[in-house]
Length: 71
Image 1 (cartoon, helix red, strand yellow):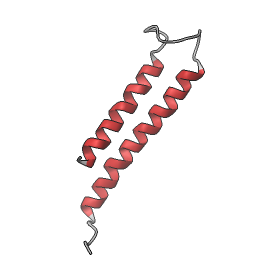
Image 2 (spheres, one colour):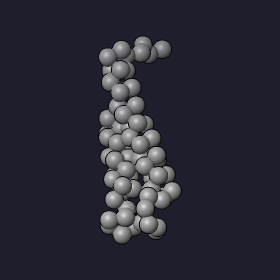
Image 3 (tube, rainbow, N blue to C red):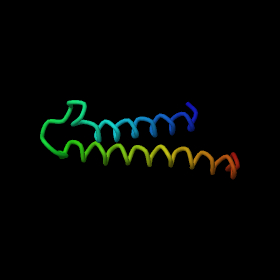
Image 4 (cartoon, rainbow, N blue to C red):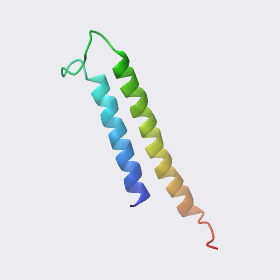
């Protein structure tokens, strides 16, 4: 699978998790009043997933600019 595609999927999944965590209360998914620990955890996991996706995309771009010799 293409690394850009994998990175894009990770970025999209992370962004969806962040948005879902932020909107849990208004859409009826929140379990308590206010911003709960589940939402904080969702934000952290989503943000880490976005960063991982960006790293995959950026590392792929760096490798394309400076290809490693094959042995």
